[in-house]
Image 1: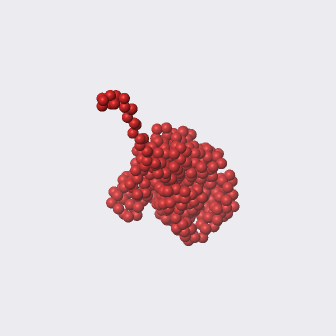
Image 2 (image 1 turned 135 degrees about the horizontal axis):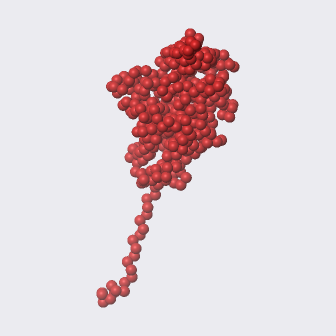
Length: 452
C-alpha cells in the first residue's frame, strides 16, 4: 500500500524563490585635479620642509628647474580648499594628481616633462587619477563600503587642470565616458556596484591655459585625437582661463571651441604660469636672459617693443653683437635682459575667478581661500586696480575676450606697463623648448592657437 501511494503522490513543490537584497542608492560627486608639467605639491612641500627628499633631488636650486623648485599652482590650491560636501549628493570626493614629468619624493623624469609621454606622461597621470577615484568610491566615506550592496544612482564628475594637466583633464573626460573597455561605468560595475542608466555626467571643466605639446605635437593638430582634447565638449559647462601674453613656440594654446555655447574662454594678463600659478614670490627673475637672436634691425625693433610695453626698463636691456658681415655690419645680435624681484601675487586673480565659477557649478570651496587671495592682492594697490579691470573684462563676456586686448592694454592704460614689470613674468627665452614665436614680417611676439 505504501509503495502504491509513493507512486501516485504529486511532484515535490519548488522551494520559494530567494528574495534579492535591495541595493542602497548613493549619489557621489567626484572632482579630478591634474597639475601642470613639473608641478608636484608633495615635492614643493619637501623643499619648504628642507626634507631629505629635497636634499637628494633638488638639482640646481633655480626656480623653474624642477618640481621641487616651484610654488603651489592654482589647481593644487583649489583642490586643497574644497569642502567635503556637495548639494544633492551623499559624498564629495576630490582627486589630486601630480603633474607630468614628476614623481612624489623622487627625481623628475625627462620624457614626462619634455614630451608629456611615458611613465610620467599625460596618459599615465590620467590613469592614476581614475584608479584613485574608483578606489575611493569603492571604499566609501567609512572606508568599509561593500559595493555589491549599493547602486550608484548619480555620479557627477568634474575636471580641473593647468598646462598639460588641462590636457589631462580633457583626456580624462574621454577615458571616463568613451573608453569602450575601461569607462568609469564599467570599472564601477567590475568593482561590484550596480550603476543606474544615465547616472554619470560631467558637470564642470575648469582649465588653466591648456598646453598639450604631446610628443612634439605642438606643430600639428594630432593632439586633438591622440589626447581626445575635444572631449571637453561632453561637460555641461567649460571655463578656460588663457594666458594672453604667452608666446613660446612650444606652448600653443588649445582653445575650447568644441564646447560651443557651453564654453567660456577668457584671456587674462600674463604668461602661462602667471595664470596657472607656480612662480615663487620675488625669486623668479631674469638675469642676463637671452630673449632674442637675429639681425641687428630686428633686435632693435624687438627691444623697443619690450621697453615701450613695460616688460623691461632701458637699462635692463642689452644688445650684444655676436658677429659682423664682410662689411663690418652686425649680422647676428643677442638681446639680453635682467629683471629682479618679480611678485607672484597676480596669480591670485585667476584663482579667484576659477573659484567663483566652481561655486556657480555646485562645487563648494572654503571662503577662507577667497579672503586669503584678496588680502594678497590688496597689499599691492596696483593689483587691486588690475583686478577691477579684469572683472569688467569678464563681465563683458567671452565673445569679446581676446589676447590682443591685453597685449595692447598698455597703450590705453599706461600704468599697465608697471604691472608687467613688477608682477608678470617673461617665459620666452632663447633656450631649447622655450624660444619665442615671432611674426615673420611684424616681428610681434605672438602665440599659436589650435581649435580644440
